[in-house]
Image (tube, rainbow, N blue to C red; front, side, top):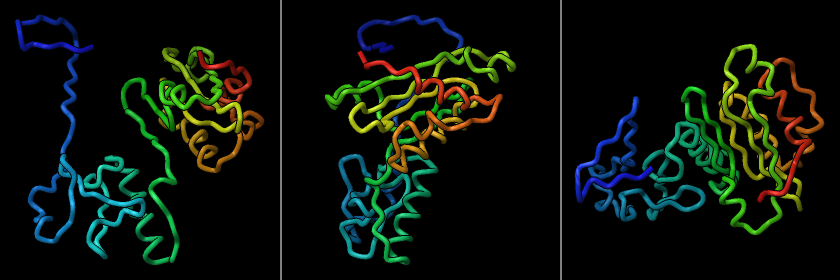
Length: 214
């Protein structure tokens, strides 16, 4: 929903209001210009794929680099820099894919591409979707609203995206994340035995009923 109040007053009725105004990094008082560290138009520190800035031996981690703005991405930034500096590794930001959860009621968890992004690739995408009402744990808890959805590249058979909206989605998404990170085909989950009664036990069943993304 988009509402403009520039021309005339508007009245909207509802029980809750969420105002998302975006965010800016707290870099304005770091004197980055004196150190020669480059920033972009929004104030984020410009970094390369290994989180190095425009100044040698200075890296930027966390919210200030605009590469995630989550606690888990900030910690992964640390892991990348520490592994490269201390272990002689060659880890990169581009090795990871977007993952996050919104701890709403019910929670929303996502990994990889959205349906719109997957469709824009032009690849043959398959989609599996199941209602949370099919999950035994959901019925036991009386929280049967929402759904699970997983996107598959039909050529590579790999999972390219997932959206889980429902009870315990923020935990269940991790079995999908792990398979995506391993670069394994979706059959790694499809043939797995998941514990009953859990939310994630429906995911193998979901992956057995795929159809082309419209």
